[in-house]
Image 1 (cartoon, rainbow, N blue to C red):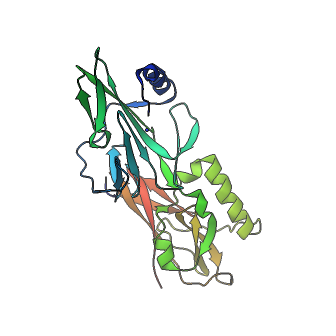
Image 2: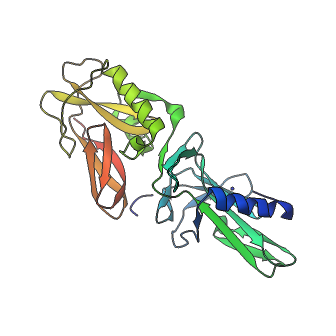
Length: 273
């Protein structure tokens, strides 16, 4: 890729396993080859990722994601207020503040097992055999921060500091789609513009983009040049592929980026006047 949870006591172990297998999907292992830059917090047994980090071939977590380790368990928790959105293998939509759960269980007659190396390995404490169970989100996951709300952004620097970019995958999540459509209906007075942007994000003559912060995601909506609510100046939007094996990422008329041909994540880039 291009860019960059806890049970104590043996009596709870089997309940945990049942929940794991009934409500979550399983991964055999995490990506152990990724080099992670991490900083230690004052809190013991907490590690924070300082850049976008590959967890496995399908999952990447943003900077600020922390790994909390507690004896035989570990949980990967997203930055404050950030949620992961997606659809599980049963077709149910979800949103959650954590994306990885790991537990190390002693399968022997005595002893215990501990999580080490941010959950990548189990350490035996007098146990003859340790078993590591890992759950991660399945399928495509996107991130958003609902605490930021939805608003226009006047400053290009502020826009570029937003941590995520709105994609068509976001708008496949009913909750996110409903919120974005409600915002568009409000700003367009219930009458969306019937214009077509080119795949490279270029608008027809006489229109410009107004930048939008949608739940911490970069988005952009077209307006005619006669619109005086926000300054004119952004005439073109680029969508650049930053995650996945492909390199195709086009601007979608919904105001978001559309990953295609193997691309799994996009970054929305503006051209400055």
